[in-house]
Image (cartoon, rainbow, N blue to C red; front, side, top):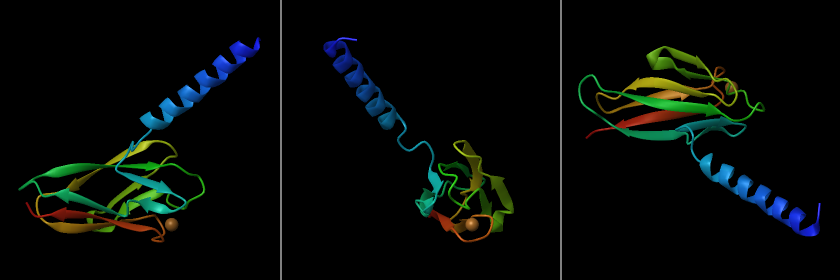
Length: 116
Ligand SMILES: [Cu+2]
């Protein structure tokens, strides 16, 4: 490989890395990592009777005990496989706070449904 080719190859790689970084933005509403759930508070507008909103979760680290997400009040318990977006339907019919946590209750977060 000539010097010029090498420089081109390196800059192409750098460009690819920059692109994939940009496109990997927020893939999910809530990320589960070694720092727990982020953001830990998610605000959703209430949508009226019968409304539901999908909240997506993505676990990005194996170094976390947040391998499940549990909504105790909704009796929802979902596994969070690494790097897979998991969608949870939550009722957003009226203003309320829906707590969620990891399987052991160490990491906590909440969905706050705000009045219209
Ligand atoms: Cu935990």
